[in-house]
Length: 401
Image (cartoon, rainbow, N blue to C red; front, side, top):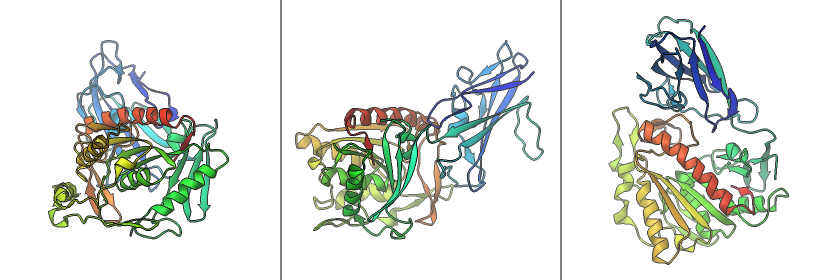
């Protein structure tokens, strides 16, 4: 009898799943397909073709996919290769507290390509992927100007997932949310300092400092926080700029004028998505000390994570310049992890690889870049390094922003 077994079938989204098919004929070719819908009913699917061994089994931890959405041995390939049926959709779970992401796994007893005629699967299994662990609590934050959600672990990390690993996490909004400005017009560092002080005043958070993790434009802000705010003791910047781009930075009496990107250098990918990398590659000639963040002032520890195939920003050059600044001032508090083949959206492990997606602020799809296999490997490795980094440098504070 055909069986499809996924273990565990109910787990956190950053935990691996073992998938096995049994009851097959020796050397039989089968299709295993994964299907999930987001909260707007957008459909995402992936599939791979496998050949059963002499015992009539397929174990994804050992078997090599012959074709489909990937080839080779990739135990979590069905998860990381989930693709939208409608172009430029990105799989994001918004309600992380109440419901899991439910992924259906289906087994077919041949190469299943045409979906015009629906063929019943020979076996199925549902896998539930949660973004919060048992006991994690969510508090809606409306304190002063600060808006966001605070995730508190049951004892004693992106947002809710990090909280499930023992850290308190404030997912901080800074535009386009509730009564905050609809669009980003400037980076108001006083607002972020207010959020940092709110965290440190919280009765369930120790007072020795906070950590910051952020991506893309958020990573530019996160790096600025590390430079100017003494409350920040550990910072992870994922594919961000080390200079102020497009929007001014304000902090008390300080105003940092931004560098404007060369929009005439935008390229349109064959997919129709917009490629921004060339707009930023030529910024080196425009840089002056007033535009560059003073990373030599950072008192805490900093970890730069960059994808070398980032098509949105020349993020490796930005991180390398920051590392050079630190070294030129005799500082050794920075570290860079550069991943060959990784794109811009380096997310927690087993998140679907997203090459391009719709960007509502731009009103266009943006090209994020990356090779699917290399990017997936970067997500797995960097997540472990992020957790180690925060455990080492926030051990006393147990806080996270």
